[in-house]
Image (cartoon, rainbow, N blue to C red; front, side, top):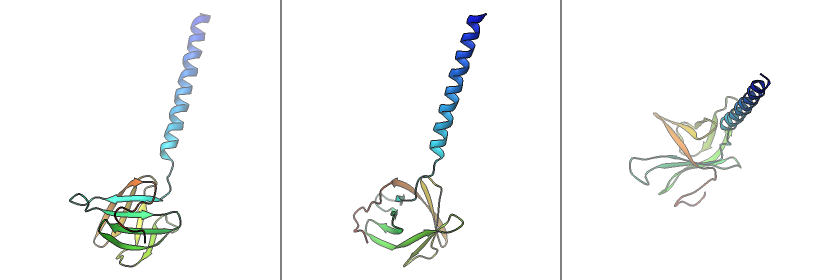
Length: 128
């Protein structure tokens, strides 16, 4: 009887360790990443996508590989929405899911950008 009790306690301890490990991994996956990085909204043909770059200093750049569309600054408001201040924007609002997606609101559509890099990257375009 004592032997079964030892196995039961060992199995219980192993289960508890597994549960704790899974909770830690879940917590790590739910952690928010900073907005800083490069995001891509793919176009209909290769190279036709639009890039949205946010740096750690509060600057953003919206560009295509053929040139800059808009550049300026960004700041988070009290509702968790990022407000962009720059030239050529019809609706200067962006929402961020805390991980890998940015939703850019532009009249009349909303565009979803996916993170391609944690580092602000400029492809075939000079940094403004």
